[in-house]
Image (cartoon, rainbow, N blue to C red; front, side, top):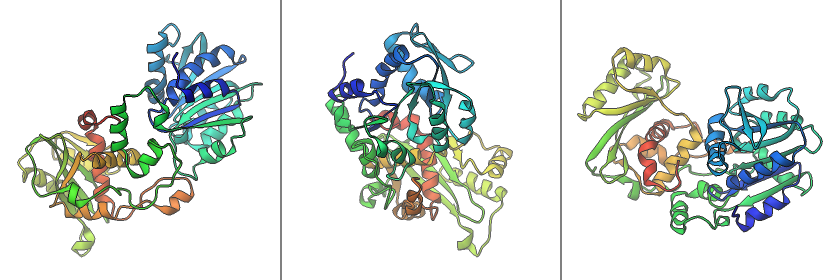
Length: 402
């Protein structure tokens, strides 16, 4: 194996009960743990072993599949139907820690070893349960994560308490990985900006504060004319007392994603008059027909069950529940804006106004959570639905956004 100077240090010093690494994307943290896992499987005392990811699917993608390519299926098996993988001759339980219910998956286990992928996005309650399960003498935990806010539980419980004996912690930056193509590194540094640059490039535990899209510049991102489009989508944020917003998005021949137009119904601006689902569905169809286009997919706020049913009843085709991963959607939108790959037509006045005033919630930060203020956010919500939904189209234009 060929390791960087930082990886060599961690590999030889990771002998504590808790061994944790945080830092930039593509900085070599996860790759190092492939070799650490091989070592642990051979050296840890007898007992149960556990591998944890945000979900089983992300653990397979981030860890097990790459290990299988390096070591072969004879050393890294596929995950069985019982949620077990054979790793270098040792059986390991595989679980996802997607929400609070994941606690039930490890209750009663006695562990000699645990591995954690992306552990900073686990529920804290799952971490606390895991801590109580590592009860075999000599038990160890190895884990990697990207940094979150400065008040996050993972920083407080692990990184701030690292003493070199019970807990060892290391910080990685993108520049700690000398094996990356310099052009790739330069592109990645361009594509992440603001909060995401500090966390995903510099590897810092910093607060989300101020404007969410601090890179947004009307002179750059708002256009008066549109190029020829290859395909279209819609993204909708639904409200009753709150505004309903439909966005028409297009893929330009110049390989940019455009917000072509918006529809907005705000009951407050119309004397408190709310529209029914049937009326909104009719407006939705009229909005699309007014542009004379056929949409590839129509993503709708996943909480808008009654509106989605009305669209189905009215035989609107290709309706899909939007991906409501808030932080992923914000990060992807910010990266596309920073890369100059997302533009908005000047007619979308409501969206432009809301993006300019879209800010992080300072009170949520006090609890270690990254959340935008839930004020005038309907256009930005619809926009991230559209960005999340079109990821398979635009991710080929970028180096590191996913």
